[in-house]
Image 1 (tube, rainbow, N blue to C red):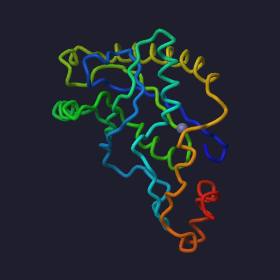
Image 2 (cartoon, protein in one colour; image 1 turned 30 degrees about the horizontal axis):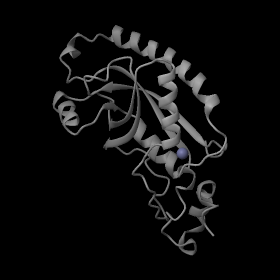
Image 3 (cartoon, rainbow, N blue to C red; image 1 turned 90 degrees about the vertical axis):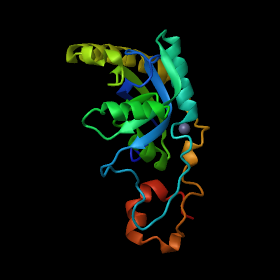
Length: 214
Ligand SMILES: [Zn+2]
């Protein structure tokens, strides 16, 4: 993506709901994440020969997320903003005890993919916003046992149809100029002095860091 000159990523994914008011077929624009992954995912570009600490208190692009939320609303669809997305490991779904624990933490929705995407996008100084489509309630909900695969697939297909409608309206609204902080995520974040970073690391990460090393 970086090589292609991509400046913004909109991630569309399915999720489960951890709150009664976030219903199946609703859309959610999360702006916070809790990481509950536990296997080796590629979570950083900077794990060898260089120390980089980017700011990640706001893990999604504020501008892009706001515009995305506004667009879903304008389409007359139900949408929730500023939600917390719990990123579980998977591929199994959560146990009942886990689901209740995540609810007690205040998480709104649950999925398996978004947080790693947000981390890497920010390190690459690419804006990232996510459109999460609710397919069902997670296992905490009393109706969960009645949920059939047929129903989940039916909801998934309806969500895909709506997501396409949202993206068609959303993409033309994105301004060509970026005013957010994502584009400067690496500025003042590289801790290791340039002269100490091995040449092979500088070469390998050149696409990401060449403008930030002076
Ligand atoms: Zn941004």
